[in-house]
Amino acid sequence: MKKMKNTIAVLSLIVAILSCLTQNIHGAEGDDPAEPAATEKPHSLTLVKAVMCEGIKDLEPKNETIIFSAELKSATCFTAFDPVPEKTVVYHNWFKRDQPDKNLKLTLKPPKWSCFSKIRIRNSDAGPWRVEITDSDGKIFQTLRFSVTE
Amino acid sequence: MEKILIFVSSIRWQDIIDIAFNSYILFRLYALFRGTDAFRVLLGIAFLWIMQRMAVSMGLILTSWMMEGIIAVAALIVIVVFRNEIRSVFRARNIWTILWGLPQKRIKTPVEIIAESVFYLARRRIGALIVLPGKEDLEEVVQRGIPWDGKVSSEMIESVFWPNNPVHDGAAIIQGNRVVEVGVILPLSHRKDFPTSFGTRHRAAAGLSEITDAMVVVVSEERGTITITRGDDLLNINEREPLVSAFREHLGIRENQPQYLKRRKIELRIAALMALLIVSGVWFSISRGLDAIKTFDIPVEYANRNPAMELLNTSATSVRLYLRGSRALLRSIRPEQIRVRMDLGKAVAGTNTFAITNDHLSIPPGLSLKEVRPMVLDVNLDTRTKKTLPIQVDWVGKLPSDLNLVRSKISPSEIELNGPKTILDNMSTLYTKSIPLNSLDSSGQTSAKVVIPSAFLKVASGSKEKVVVEYEIRRR
Image: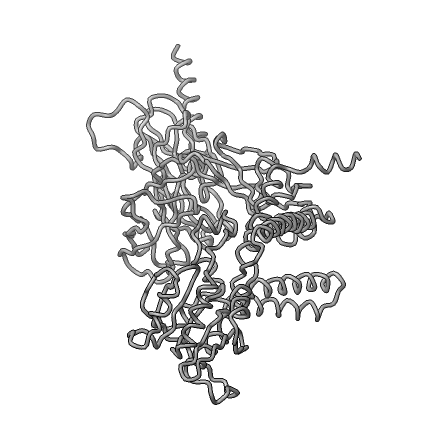
């Protein structure tokens, strides 16, 4: 029985490491910067932070901005959810001037989870953009707006 | 025989009315202006017009141009020169007479009484000036005297010119059997070939005759002679009979009046028939002449659109019509006389396809549709709706590398638009006009206009097209 518990613990550790290695998902209970101040947590999936940034460093968004020069080569959308009642997915839907560009599916795991999506940008992508963060039913949590400049 | 039947069956009731109406107008013009100088000149112009058409058909370019010019000038001259005659035709008659009435039997002027009075006055050496108007109106030519309106009698005429009468120096105008005016001042003639024996009375009589068709009788006070003037002619009369004959000729009084009236009736019937033949000839030459086809590009009109719907676009804004008809008729048609009208009363939201048929066309009579291109029209309609859309800033240019624009806030953040549903359904964001980043170096605010991407969209009342953008810039 004890051996079985150890096996489960090892497997859990492996899953956690693999999750951290996956590019799109960064999440850890202790180091989430989007910890809500409220004492009473809601019971449904809640978006606590959504920002556009130039990159991710130490599981945190680096250089929040709404202007992305094409020289940066990429734009990143960071989101944090707390709580995450059950394993689920959310979508980062990228639009360039009202036209869908990319739909990225991101997996969330309880109890809370942070994740990001990233796109490559070029000179030809200059113009206004937006990212709609939705759940699996298409309900929009938040829309982030930014511009890509040459 | 078959051809005649086909031809007769192709005549519409409108064509019959067309010919009858214009024939009647031509006949009325003849009846009203017959015998006047204006009518003779109009006949001359009509002849010139026929010559001009012949010149055109024979390809005589210069002649046809010249004729055209002469006709235009002549028409103008007729109105200017014969204005008195034209006016007297329309003024002397009431509207019923102009439209319908035939020349009535005139009230007979008692020429014998006038002649007798004239000779009486001559014998007594009493000067007199009597005007017998023709068809022209004298109102503009003479200086009006005193209205008299007395029935013609020897005593009446003699008393008017009696030396002690205050009006005896002026002229008396006799119309029908009435002395209508006395003491009338006539225009003087400027002729230099007058006999020295002629005085002012003679000069006044000649002056009026020269410029009108009136006949004037002068009785010389000094010599007791009688002179009549008509046109440029002056004639001394010594006997009663030639004077009566001159009066009769001038006033159109025939010895045998019933026969004259009968002849007049026949003449009018012939005139009516001629008018009918001329108009029929012109009508047939215009509407049934050589068949030709001409193309017209006509803009399409859309009517009866549901006010709740917007006309978004159509597959064509105009259609090309190939119309068939006589060359003369086609040449005279202007595009404004043709209409293509689509009824959108039953149109629904979305694309509606209409086949263009004769029912949609309004073309002048005598022409028929040979072909229409395109044959169908697609008309896109949409219902109007309102939608509130968020506004996003369209940043352009480059921010200095040590600066970072971390956030911006737009006020108001959204505006309401009114427009076609399909357009609004496909829109989720409105963008501002481009705001350059190059000049920004610290946090601040600016204003920008919102770009409305379609002319069909209107900003709903209460919403603003201009927004204020607050932005926050941080150093990296």
